[in-house]
Image (cartoon, rainbow, N blue to C red; front, side):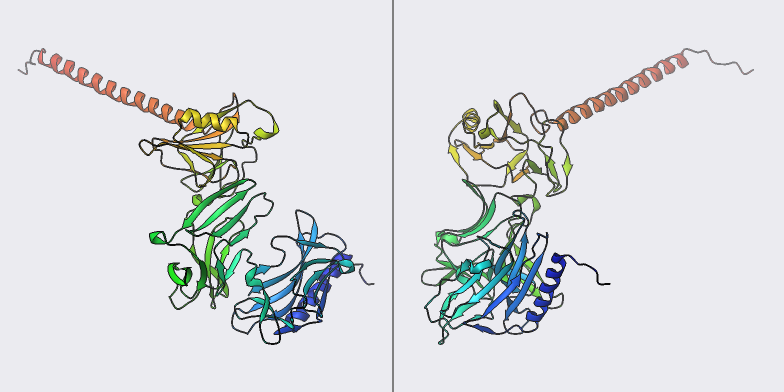
Length: 478
């Protein structure tokens, strides 16, 4: 008797077979009129992926491959349809990076007769296209660099994936000033960006109306950047006219070995240069912008403090707790002043700062004015007051509670968090650690007094004994 398999299993099996069929017959190019279809499960299955590899570059390891993919998208509980490029097993480009095309029943890729590459859903509904109709496009191919292109009969490129960067920059790819890479953490309202500006390159955390930098690199002598390129020796920065003005080199790899790609991590927000190891058959980062856990903007979850031991200590209304890096403060402090509630007050945390920079700020104001300004602005959740430079002071405002880390305590630096009035946190001025130190000091004092008292008593006893011995008449042994 034949078992009754669910439709989802059969569709998964069908897509696996399609995957192997295309993987074994990937071509060097696809001509106009080409069309391929992937089936989409009728019911949502978390973690599902159906993929057909269509194109492959030369056989050098690892080769680049282009694929048509159907993937389960968990937040929406829908399936997305996209064109993807892989270096080995690493995804380095995706047509749905900024806007996902959700489909049901079928996912179709077609290079139309007039040269437009299109993604379609049921009833030929178009969800993504290159916009290259009537531009004499004859074929789609993937180059040795991983650049997916549409070209005419004379090999003139009419469209290329290199012009639409996502979260990866490949070897040989060029990014002009005012362009960027972006990465989107799962189940999050913020995103990271790697941006090329005239005076620097920088990493940013973006959240609604707020934008904060947490790493940057600037050429010396205030030279302006025109574009940057990933070359044989690393990431190279150029000015006009195409003169190299700075570069970021790997830490260990030989100068003759080129990085395969630069990537912006969608979980940590770190940026790295990745090299391929033929022996291990995998990619690894030989340069990372940030090498310390607590310098990462989201080393801890919101309202978590990254400590010297790389653990996360939650800001709580009450006692604190310590968890591993990235763990949450699910029972911790959380306020939304713009949704009502209140009144609020500012709670100062000892020995704490923030890795985020470049947000709203006011200069040359007092600490009380800094506190009052944050309280009066509902979007302000925390403020950092810095008066370490003699004669100047700056007040930085934060609308997101991440990037908080423990620092060596210094005079003139105060980090304050907005909390409901009348509550105090275990990490604030009434820090339990202070009470522990006081208690230890008291106990130590008692022990020292007891030792000194005992020594004093012993000296008195010995002196009295000596006096008593001197007053005793000698014994007659006759």
